[in-house]
Image (tube, rainbow, N blue to C red; front, side, top):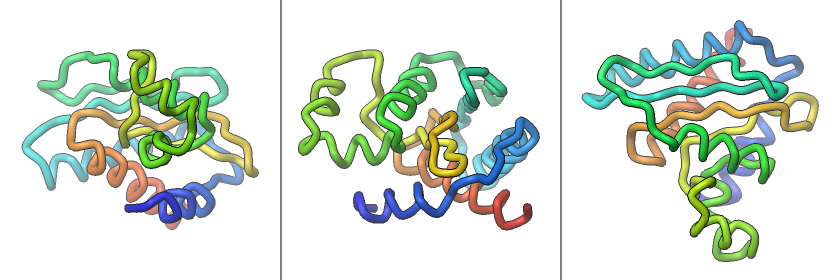
Length: 147
């Protein structure tokens, strides 16, 4: 996946109005996909308008700082954490984040965008970072298609 594809997804996967119920649907979709495809488990964190609306650790998953790090990366960059990963050699700020343990320069964090504004983040951690990203994207696509 390249930067253009990632930016395209950020443009396409926007919400007219994001609700807590949509967040729960997205999280449930992620959990179902993980159960079908992987042996490992994940943690999911969704924040919206500075409010934690969901923090879920699948059975067997332990707390780790990665969900918070991915959230911070998304909210401060205004992009998915995968975009930051793919741009880190070109954007000096992102390059600096690589050595800061408050950020996660890897996939697994995706912005909640309403009417062009980033209002939150959906984060997944526990798999390979591209798989974390893909789970979020597929689940947002699924929920938007059924809305």
